[in-house]
Image (cartoon, rainbow over all chains, first blue to last red):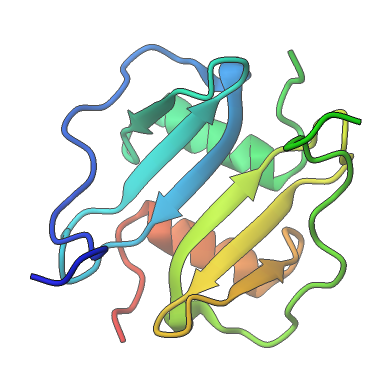
Length: 75
Length: 75
């Protein structure tokens, strides 16, 4: 194993509560040879905490759509 | 100005060529007090180069949709 290479999925569990308004930024990691599912990792405002989101959850899809259309609520 | 705080938009220009297949991951940064537009920063495979994408470009929207539906082509 090489150092610094992710050899597995990064998310163990995903956040079920709709935390869209607390999101500072979102990282989308497409499926790859180390993880067969897309992973979404949100960084929260204030705390900087990283939280995994479920790509299939309707509220998560909406959050992404709203970021893409420059409409995420600013709180 | 505090150290470590982004006080302006990070993207100066965006990539116009459709580079979806070269994307390792994508960071979505919603509009905030330091930047009034959503910013999308893609990290490329192999080189690790960071490239800004235009949230309004149709090919970019498609790339995001395909990542969300776990369908990004793996090359």
